[in-house]
Length: 186
Image 1 (tube, rainbow, N blue to C red):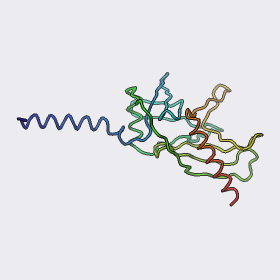
Image 2: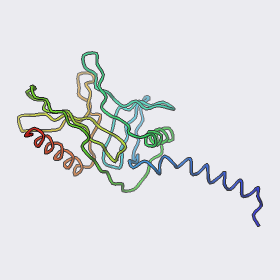
Image 3: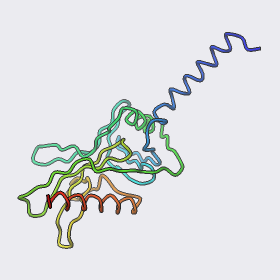
Image 4: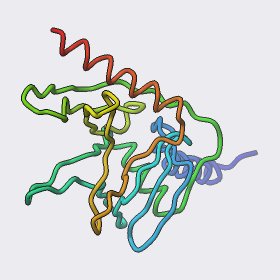
């Protein structure tokens, strides 16, 4: 026979467990690897994408920004609070998930530049409705290509965003270039 006191303790225990795992349940992107160094970290999400140079404290995350001519440009945006809480919890507790996770994407915005020789458009890609990443479409000697977030550090360009999954990279970049071409025609 279960006593009322035992029932209450059981409900408290279940509630605490539920609250601890709640952010993980509602975030589609999962942290599958963490590397930390000097207050900064690098994470891999869904075994597909890597984000470097993230500064974090106990209650905040600061993603790398592009700095140019005394201006700061945002390159990453967290799109929902549950994902932000999940990232903080994962980083604070070195908590990663092991498994196969799928990564979906959609092109969120694209701004075509008309009077620039090499830089053709600014765009952003949303991954799993959790994180938005800014990128640029550039015209080079071999055609159009996509530049992902990076920063100049000690006269060397450091990539803040990389694809681990090359098929995903190919699909995203083909879609960006196709969308750019169709918008340019209109």
